[in-house]
Length: 218
Image (tube, rainbow, N blue to C red; front, side, top):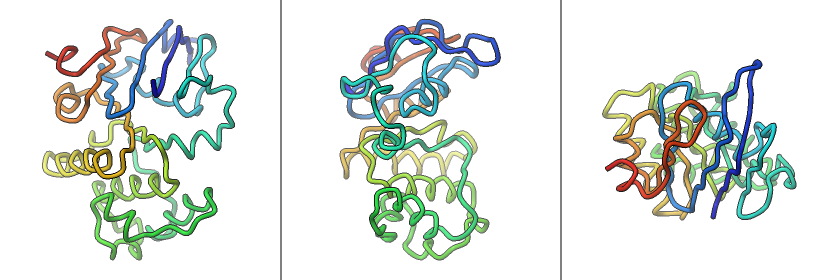
């Protein structure tokens, strides 16, 4: 099992966000589905130790994440946030920044191609990118660390339908070409049906149901 959460509890500002939540996420593409405020993004942040549970445990390939070095874990399990957060400068500078954590020189053409952008985007200032292009640049930057897992938090929520479909094809292509496992947070069950093999449905910080997509979202 890729990830396993056991009886996880987490409060924020004195309010419970996750309430004794247990869930499994296998290899492949999994979707965490639920309404706004259900704890989806909080759950995602637990997977690479951007947050730790107050009680319960999170396991990555059988090891409690609290036993793993956070920086090393984040190289293996890279998170792309809902809102693009590129560093000032060019796309290439962003790729080099991320690759620097591995000590390797990035191949910008390959990374941009995987993210659905032309190689010429390497020299483009991030301020000149559309929201969809920023999202793709964020994907390319995340891939620069050669992660085993990508965590995507509502990657298409601010995009029009055409750009959304294009990003979804890119996500599916990453799984197909590289074998990268992907966990995507979405409020849209239809998106989960299009992309995911496995669905974890949550509401108000609790697990509602989990299993193969065709069963959970039938």
